[in-house]
Image (spheres, rainbow, N blue to C red):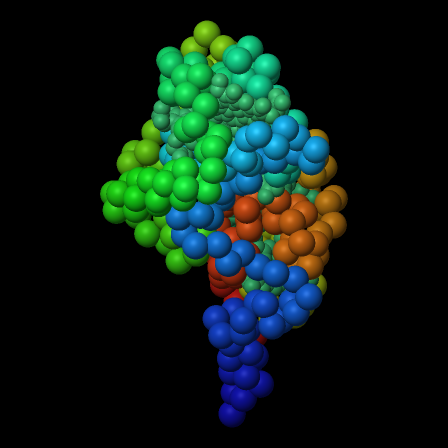
Amino acid sequence: MNYPPKQFLFFTLFFISALSPTVFFSETALAVAKSHQYGDIEMSQPGQNKAVLPVIFRHSTHRDKYTCRLCHVDLEFAQVAGGTGVIEDDNRDGRYCGACHNGKHAFEITLCAKCHPKNQTERQELDRQGKEDFFKAKKTLPPARYGNKIDWIMAENTGKIKLQDALPGITMPQQDMVVNRRDEPRTPSLAGLPGIIFSHSKHVVWNGCGMCHPEPYALEAGKTKMTMKEIISGKYCGRCHGTVAFPINDCSLCHSKPVTLK
Ligand code: HEC
Ligand code: HEC
Ligand code: HEC
Ligand code: HEC
Ligand code: HEC
Ligand code: HEC
């Protein structure tokens, strides 16, 4: 009887498909945002002028037009909520949001109320509008299981969305000098769990090199040690997977290497 390997396979499948990640990693919270709010960032600095309510920046309405790299490398937005420290003068100077919100690429920076609702009623109206726009756009894009429930890689691959990687007159078109198309395989420390294939070619389309190197990843295969707990708490892969890219709930998208039974 081929009993032990079967049990082994069952364990793996059970682990990947049935076990709730929140139960398995009890002390950590996984992404639970609704699809239209996944990737929304509330931008507010402590001690800031209370005359304006926090600004909601939506990744979903921007990542369908621009690469991550354009904003996070060229325009210098931090990859941490609240980390950039945008002030009104910067925006009016054509930096940060103002690089596009200048009436050329997107609405003028002088339309304050589009970003800063004056009261809760205006906030709710912006949220309602945002939700309506999201579902209208989503209808035209390939579906996924978690996060925005949009398969962004497929959307880009099939030309349903076209990503702009530079802003004429503001940033120079970037040609990353070194192209790396290698896959980086990783074997998790738990026996029986499918291995991970990190694809450089799939990531570089969105992220260039500068969003991951030299931080958080050393330029050497296997050098960076990472555990699932750290990833769930927002480090390494979890910086993006759980905030903007598909969340950790989708175990099998990363733990995708076929299990070989001996
Ligand atoms: C495209 C979106 C957008 C528009 C339009 C916009 N802002 Fe802002 N504003 C922001 C963001 C983002 C921040 C930073 C929020 C944070 O990090 O707390 C900010 C911050 C501020 C702050 C607090 C920081 C500071 O400089 O004191 C004030 C005040 C402000 N904006 C006023 C305005 C006014 C007045 C207008 C219209 C003339 C305006 N903003 C238009 C996005 C916008
Ligand atoms: C149009 C500009 C823009 C684009 C495009 C963009 N981002 Fe962002 N991103 C921002 C801004 C603004 C913030 C908030 C920064 C702040 O609060 O200071 C942010 C925040 C983040 C954060 C921090 C999240 C958190 O909860 O701490 C991550 C991670 C991130 N972005 C990843 C990405 C990835 C991955 C992509 C591409 C799929 C992307 N971004 C595309 C502007 C952008
Ligand atoms: C790389 C260009 C770019 C940058 C940078 C950018 N935006 Fe936008 N944004 C756009 C475009 C294009 C649209 C859609 C066209 C329009 O509404 O004018 C848009 C739409 C929006 C909208 C309306 C749709 C929605 O999401 O509700 C808001 C609000 C907004 N941006 C806020 C911001 C804030 C806040 C920042 C800075 C933290 C920012 N944007 C930075 C290009 C940009
Ligand atoms: C989304 C994150 C991400 C992006 C974007 C990215 N890398 Fe990497 N890179 C990694 C990871 C993860 C590893 C493996 C590190 C480890 O195993 O410790 C790696 C490893 C490397 C290595 C060492 C191993 C090897 O394959 O030779 C080089 C060199 C490298 N990357 C170059 C690049 C270049 C050049 C770009 C842009 C064209 C790029 N990377 C973009 C995440 C990224
Ligand atoms: C800088 C942000 C960032 C980091 C860091 C990052 N990713 Fe991603 N990853 C993305 C984006 C953006 C996509 C496009 C799909 C999406 O947004 O849901 C993606 C897609 C993927 C895909 C789907 C590719 C496919 O075959 O369809 C896998 C698998 C993946 N990432 C694994 C990883 C692993 C493993 C790590 C850590 C070693 C990692 N990612 C680190 C941003 C990131
Ligand atoms: C974004 C990609 C990604 C997703 C999604 C993901 N993992 Fe992982 N996982 C990794 C990476 C990378 C490692 C570390 C591999 C190594 O040791 O280098 C890992 C390691 C592990 C380990 C080994 C022990 C440890 O703590 O390092 C376990 C167990 C694990 N993952 C379970 C899960 C489960 C359960 C899910 C779904 C809830 C999941 N993973 C989703 C990328 C991912």
